[in-house]
Image 1: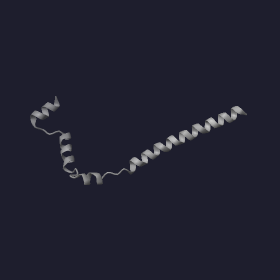
Image 2 (image 1 turned 60 degrees about the vertical axis):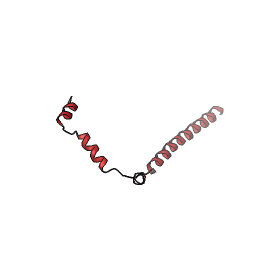
Image 3 (image 1 turned 90 degrees about the vertical axis):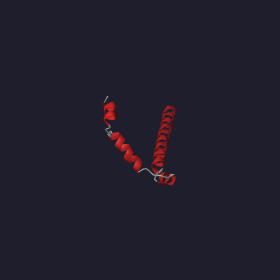
Image 4 (image 1 turned 45 degrees about the vertical axis):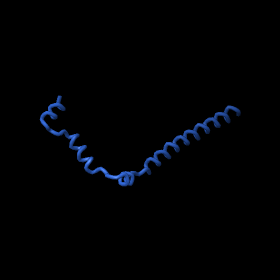
Length: 73
């Protein structure tokens, strides 16, 4: 209902103004766009997940070794 009212009255919405200003400052070439992207955070995130998985694996193997040692004693 409000959308139709704004459309009929010709009043721009805040979203329309925000997208217009965002497109005005967007990079114009692929080189500018790819130059502003940094994958360092992505690599760090992948290493953090791999480290967490490795830690869980080591804990699991340690628990199995301890239980086997206690069971055989």
